[in-house]
Amino acid sequence: MNGIQKNKEVNNNTYVVSTAMISSLGFGNKKNMDALYNGDSGVKLIDDHQLYPQKFVGARLDSKALNRCFGNIQHLSHLPANYEFTRFEKMAIITMGGVFRNIEFPTDEKTLFLLSTTKGNIDLLKPELAKKFGKERSMLWKAADIIRKFWGFENKAQVLSNACISGVEAIHIVNRMIKQGVYKHAVIVGADMLTEFVISGFMSFQSLSSQVCKPFDEGRDGLNLGEASACMFLSSDENLVPKNHDKIVVSGGGSSNDANHISGPSRTGDGQFFAISSALKEAQLSAKDIDYISAHGTATSYNDEMESKALTLAGLHEKPINSLKAYFGHTLGAAGLLESIVAIHNLKDQKILKSLGYEKLGVPLTLNIIKETKQWPMVNILKTASGFGGSNAAVIFSKLITAK
Image (tube, rainbow, N blue to C red; front, side):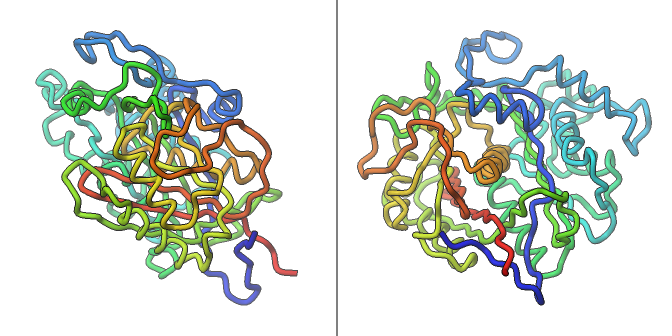
């Protein structure tokens, strides 16, 4: 295994300083990682007619816990004390509070704030909520600006909304901006929630499963939707990484568009292969250097089939591979960040996660799907993502090895 080596004279690394996540498995990194290592799933049968007229299987945040946690940090807001926040905004703000806990974070002009989401405040399309918060609030830029103002960032908020690759592509783009000196630091938050609009859309595709999803399995019959928020603080300043913590860097990334179909992925896997190849090239690594892959793995027929082809084309089919969708559901714009943070914890813990729901191979090309959670030596890990419109992205995280 080859790791990224620290050059004593030149430091052009993007360091993962701090991360946080909230999901159906709990609030905070520890609760989520404990649940994952225990094999727990946050995907349940949801029967809430206020959310959707039919029962469906998905993963939902605890709303009471959400409001309680927000109440604990609301006093930190740079907005007026009586300012009202939407559920989506609370999700993002709470997660950012988890990143900023115990560290001093910069908010000056050297810091980028970026929101990754697919739908944001889409629930404000409902007349009663639009009346309460205003129609403009449903715009992604407006939600991002409110979150920015809560924390007092000086720069204008940026939004990345590119279907389900948004989180992974955000990391990739921010990494390049930091390495090019455009920004010194960046805070990325990814969030999406369950709404009637989102559920109806996936129902129209007939892509939702009536059970906990089974990525890459022969019995898979669709995906589960989930809601979550995840945040990552990246910086070129190595000194911001807490002492006695492993130094993890974003070593490479890539994105592509296979231009196959408005919703269906490439049948050949070439789009994701190109994204992976770009990530490897930027990281100056080869397929043999990758130790673990956190795949997109939606448990839909075409996606999993495409990934088996892409990973085989990239020479990665024998590497340990998993999908986290049966733990969290598909959290859309949050997925790439959420699953990257889990992978970073796996890298720190030197432990790989069972691909929950998988029993028997159900894709055309053989993959090494992880069947049990276990210790595993790792230096470089790959996170992939694919989405509507033929979008694909990949990012590599590496454990820094200090040159002797």
